[in-house]
Length: 65
Image (cartoon, rainbow, N blue to C red):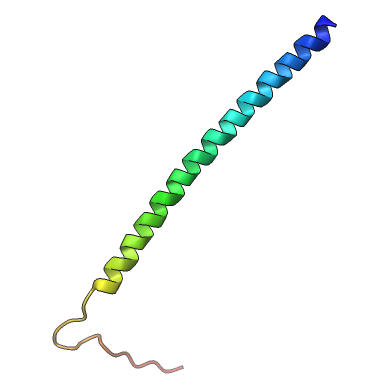
């Protein structure tokens, strides 16, 4: 019975370590995704706040297909 008990305890510890690593990886990924989201939001806001030149250049664009 000692062999089975040792095997089960080893597997249990291995699975717990694997779960911990997965949780840490997911938390890190969530932090990166939130930082990217914030950077994207700031970029979109800065683009939308950019005013066209006072002389009107670039305000209109002719497009032909």
